[in-house]
Length: 525
Image (cartoon, rainbow, N blue to C red):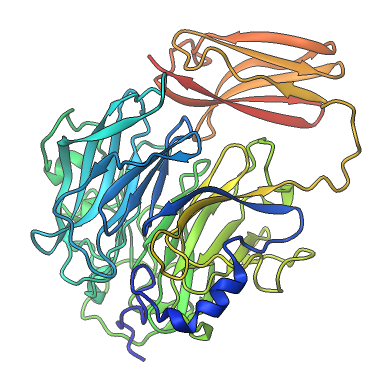
């Protein structure tokens, strides 16, 4: 074994010998095979090697195309034909290019997109902020572009000495901080040394960066005061949120808890997914790969005992390379397509090369592979035919969206798809819904919004407003009895203490008779 060996097949880019896979590809189609009651639906097709996507609060989608360095925009489920930006000076290798994207949590008041890419001018990674111009608030056709002249560098020279192990994900947490994943850059021992940024997830404060072009700021200017190593003598260590990682290409933030779900691509034997429950945790690489002690010796090892993964699987069983990808923790938000209650808090993990989809469940004391459900493809895999999936997004309506980078590495086979729970087994027929929740009006809302609902029977109603992190902001109706019929209430866009809420997206959740429905409210100040 060589613990530091690179991924045997660069699953994000290398063209596999398609002749050996063509029969399998033609026989299987693009739709995932899932348990009964779940459906896999196409949203957008025709993407060119797209590793990352970002959802805007109004359901528009930004997608990066890795090799072409193009940023694409999806409006009302349609992929606009022209890119909204083409990033310049991008370094292209099997694991390099434009890798990650996210949008500012203050959108549309802060109309910023953040891009992670390998720079062609040297051996380094850049993270840049671009300003959107056009119909940012989605009051007309929803089209906008990214102004390339507005580029503001957040980082200009993150280490990129090798062409592999780049990490590449960008996420904002419920705390408003930007989280950045970086691979070990084939410098394995640096993953556990906090003064080096390889093999880390960084936590960065970008809220104070000025508008317009510029940067990069000093590290002190973007270091949150509550980062775990903020007292370390090394300025780079003060940015570290998690360390001891090999190639955490895929990670997700759980809004209710702020915890990170981290998928770390393995070397020779194990793929693993970990849950970061405390700031500053060490996840063991290079001393551990999954549950296995690698025996790799580093001259200096720092920090506490490493945190084991919540789930790991043997990558040697796969024919076509392996690379783990994680979904967010599944959270039920009252939408019409939400999964059954037993899925609450679960993590789905898939493999880019093999196309498996597994469900990992917390049983109250420990994490484990979830028990099989009737009709799933086999005992291990909750789903199959998920080849090439590189990103996930949990929609408030309960759907689990996913991004396919490419199908069997063929160009223009990338797609956005969604998994929905549509089963009506055990639900008695009804002549009308027990409750209906109309779209909030006006949209967007600037000073107040009307919330209209209809109940088929009398009883207590609860109507509350939440932010996207799941925090309750306002109780519009609290367990008050209403007769059957149509009712309206207004929300004045203020929280419980009377303070106006900022521009952004909020959730109105209506509950009655054991039924919950949710609607999004876009606020523009």
